[in-house]
Image (cartoon, rainbow over all chains, first blue to last red; front, top):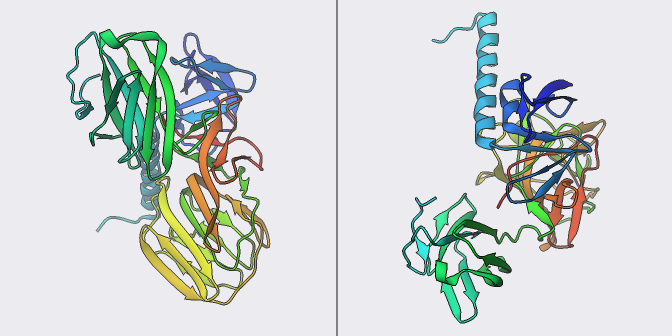
Length: 93
Length: 285
């Protein structure tokens, strides 16, 4: 389970702030923290209407920028791998 | 908003005009018409992504009409799609003529499973079957397409290669290293003589006379244990004996935002058979 903070557009934040609502959920358990701000999470029982008048009904989780998510995720995974290699004493030739 | 080129009708834009952007499959013939006025893209198109293009039309202020809509039609290899739109102000209007799903649904870039969500395709493969997938893992895992121990499963192995595996140990392993999260084209086929696995246009084959059949699942494989996928899927086409029996596209239902896959062959919406909820990619609009 992770705690995220939702703004008025149900975009996720890792930190609390003005107008944000705390939400605890497992939908991001498999997602690196650095990617979470690129998701919209509408909890069950909530609704969000976009600028075109289209309604999304909770529970609804959507990647709002898949390219950014993938880049951030790759960067995190590469950093973790380099850390692991460093611990193992593996150096670049 | 301007920055595009290739406007249907060959007209020039004024700030008092409206822009109608039609998103349709690549290389469509797109036409807008109202009364005696008709405009076609005349071959003009702008790439939206690898499969969809943007077709722009200018609606002049003198053509604004709050009562009578424009009819927008796209003709392409997938058939004919049509809708209507009222243009009555100098705004940007986006129209999606996406034949992937009906108007009650919204097509998305992908469904993403965390290892708890899966879909029962509700069909078993014939002796001769093929599965054409746009799919990937987000972490090496099994069950991307699972069809029982005697038919096999598509999975990402511990060496980060996509592979087709049968319980007797027979395996087809692709050469290319997986890029986690990158949707790619994968085709699995079987006929009376054996199996083939095609990953991004590289094909591996094996001879094998197996006629077994079992229920087909996306993101779940039932073998000695049950395995689930961490991955994404955009679409799945299943052919039995050369007949298209499933043509499934990632989407969510507008009425309740439930994510799933729309099957164009049977006009059926497949939802999550597991727990939790799919994460969806961006709207295809």
